[in-house]
Each structure stands twice: as C-alpha cells, then as structure tokens.
Length: 250
Image (cartoon, rainbow, N blue to C red; front, side, top):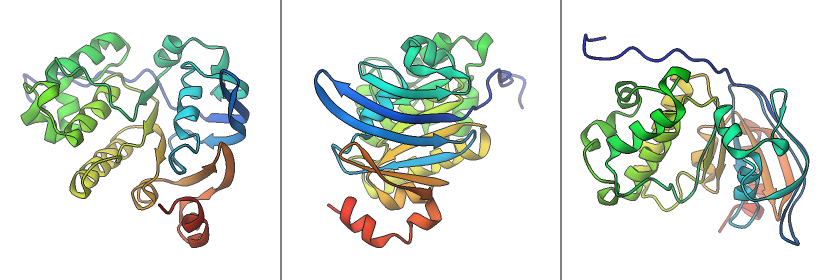
C-alpha cells in the first residue's frame, strides 16, 4: 500500500441469512408472487432464474420494501424486512443494483462512487475510491468520464461498484447481463467473481442468462408466473435440461 493510498475502511457488517417464507406480493389488486420460499445462506450466491415477467424484479423490490405490498416473511438475520423502512434496509447493508442501473449520468464515475461512499458514511464502512478501483480496475481509466458517455456495460460496472462503495453485506443484482454484448457480459461476470473472492458478501442474482448465472451461483431458485418451480444446487440445475428448455428458453 502506497503512502497516498488510504487504508480500507474497517468492516462493521457481516452477511446474514436472507430467508423468505410464504411470500405473496401485490401491485394494487394484481397478485404477482404466490407463496415464494427462498433462502440465501450468509456468504453464498443464489441465482433467481426466470423469464421476463416471472416475478424476479418484484421479489427484489419486496426484499428492499420498495413499493410492493407483501404478506409472508422476509427476514435478514433477526430483522423482518417487511416491517422495515427502505432507508433502514439500505443501512443494514442490503443494496440493490436495479436492471436500469440508475447511475447519475450528469456526474462523472468518480463523483458517482464518492457520493455513494459519502452517503453510506466512511465511518460506517463505505469503501475508498482506491479500494474500488482495485476491485474494478477497468474503472480507473473512466473515473473522470461523465455517466452519459459510458457504454451500457460500463454503466453496469459503475452501478455495481457504486453499490460496493456502501460496503454491503447483501447484494441484489437484477439482470446485470441484460442487453450487454458477450464480451461485456464476461467483464461483468469477472467483476462479480472478484466481489465473491475479496469480500464477505451474500449475492442474490436475478437472471435469464442461464450460463452466466450458473457460472457464479452456489444454488438456483427457478420461478415462473410468480411461483416457485425448482430450488437446489447450481450443479444439479445444470443437468435439468428439460426445465431449462421449458422455463428459460426464448
């Protein structure tokens, strides 16, 4: 570590188990999720697979208590998230990277990352810019580029790095490979692998790209039309060719 490089902030959070039981979700009168059961063990990566409209994004929004009416239970460690305000869920270390990324395109990459770390509070474990660029080296050359000048893949990497700037314990990734070229998908996958190697973070990965998800996940939860279809180890799901054809093939 050089003299000008700040030491990483001390971690104050450790991942806990995310346990979802009997989850029903509604938008107004529309019933979207039907009794879902899902567990993300502490420190593991679970792939949530399903076609567009299967309910993946709704489940992610349910975990963050963002505009979805729910019944059932969503517990992160000892805390019931259904009864917790979204900003408190974020302070607990639960961070969502949404499908549309939502980086601040009028700001530079540097400003996006520094703003996220400042909002988290460096005293509570927000990561330094130097630490983030070590984990995401491709961003080093992009730090002074405005968000609107980035490619879709670059924006996705910034969105993931911005979430990591808050030092999360549970990372929710909503279709990070969606709409990206194969080479860029590989770069995003490598960034997620670095997170898995370097940090004690649980990951819930919503995806349609089966190969991408299976390369990263410990286990798989397959949903269709808001209901659970299959749940088990990723290695076992890799052999479920008929399920993949029936519920994931375009």
